[in-house]
Image (cartoon, rainbow, N blue to C red; front, side):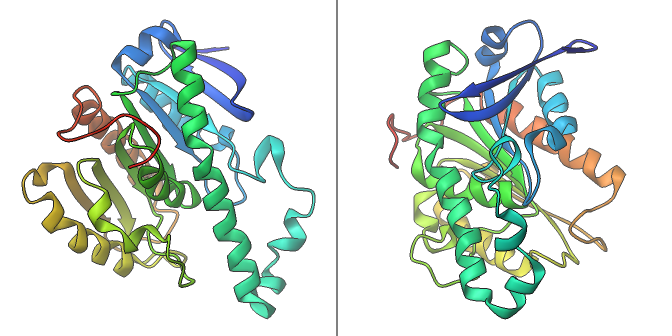
Length: 260
């Protein structure tokens, strides 16, 4: 399928349903960089089409992915497990299931990058990750799991989980540098409080003191979780510019392999 100069392939990569958008060919786009992109909670990869198109128009290979239990592999009991009623009556169990989605999805990233590299659809020093809401939370955790991720651009998602778990990304600010982190948030977010994300960036700052340009926090004033059409466009432009700046050159002190 083709959208102007952007082509689309629907595929399965390392067992994960994927939607790739690119100009020319996946291999040519991967020479500039490959970006893994994750959707929000209860969503699916196709809903991220504007982001995938924007990233592809920036010259990258954009790979939209279904999170565990979502999209083409949506769990059959999703509506029951994540119902509003269950969240109200058994918050801890429901939130635990939500965190498990983040953990299981992020855990797939090393195999995804391996498979993309085997295809010639990625190069270990030019891989980035981004996502909205749930996808943003996957992005923060994935950075801690695979050192081949050079840049991340989470949108309206938090590195701080609502349950006290030791592997919550906000507990490990020392492990993010030199990955270039752009966090975009909404001042009045009704689902993801900005205070935790802002505090996390404050914790990151000392570790980025030698190269502070690798760290950026953007908060859109006066809007909630779903932003507004014009602000969603801004998030896309910022994501593309961020990867354009940081994916083409490996960061100092990075290492190959799945663990940071």
